[in-house]
Length: 158
Image (cartoon, rainbow, N blue to C red):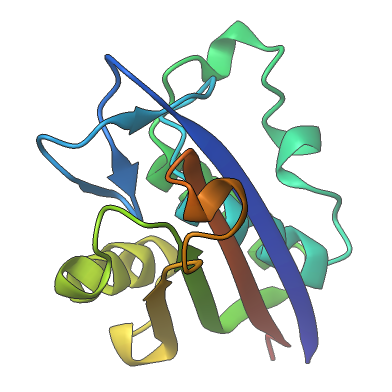
């Protein structure tokens, strides 16, 4: 078994749609980024690659490559899972914490768990998504953006 941790953060950017965990939040300001800026999925991808000692999201899907402009991060997650599977690993579970003042995560956490689980070919019971505020401290607490921490456990395939 191998464990990896992931992190991502993005600032809010007017005129973009907000997507977290593959779930769109209509009416909310989106996040700045080269792809769809799904900070939750990006942190999970980083955790997966970290557990496999395979670098980070930027080394696989660089924001300097026009190919990834506007990319659906769920598709990037599927590609990451395929890559670690080719190296002999499968995702055992993922735990992620989304830190932001808005939107509220808990009401949509179940949907996010289902989207993430489907992309990783695991049951939703092996995916945890939690929302936290930062009690008005730092940039996340001031509502400037979203911060996500994720942990992934990989197991060797037999």
